[in-house]
View 1 (cartoon, rainbow over the protein chains, first blue to last red):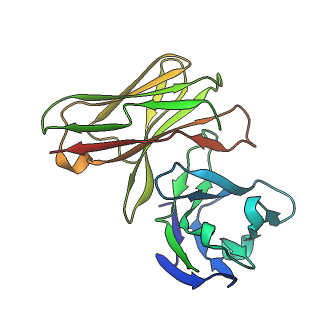
View 2: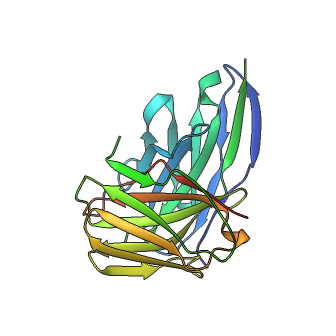
View 3: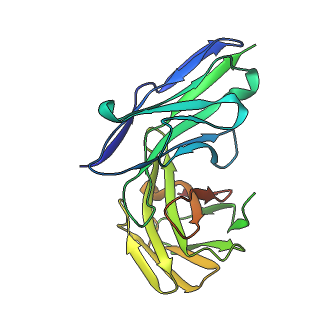
Length: 113
Length: 113
């Protein structure tokens, strides 16, 4: 069965620390990969996406992610987090022509001042 | 923000009653999706639509039905609400073509007592 797993459910870190969130997927064939963010009380917003080309993708708010095909991974990184990065982060994968997304369970990130 | 609205935004209902949630878009996108968000599960696909009157089941479709009689509206119906359907429901839309991401609506918080 196709699945997406995010390794950390909760992460707590201080401002200016570096952040890395893991995402692994199990899909055969070509995939499109996404990271979405959900700030408290808000809807999901796209952070970044990978469809093809350079496996290192840059998104909004200083986030980037690296697609490693051999490891079926798409990890999210940010070199220096801010308090405003407190949110829940979701990795999602699309592997079909209908655009359906399979989401990971999410990682709650809390950044302390 | 993409032109997606959901109504109602909050609803409390009783077990056994039918409930209909509405998703309305102004983008004229072909693809529309309904997800539910539950702690520890991320978002899971309930139903999706790839055009007027064209719908299909997602991962967690039991107890839900959908209709799409117009491009702009995608309705989700809980035929007989149960407490396990207490959740936050998100609608999403996607444009034509492979290199497009989904945009999410603001969500509907449904409580079934």
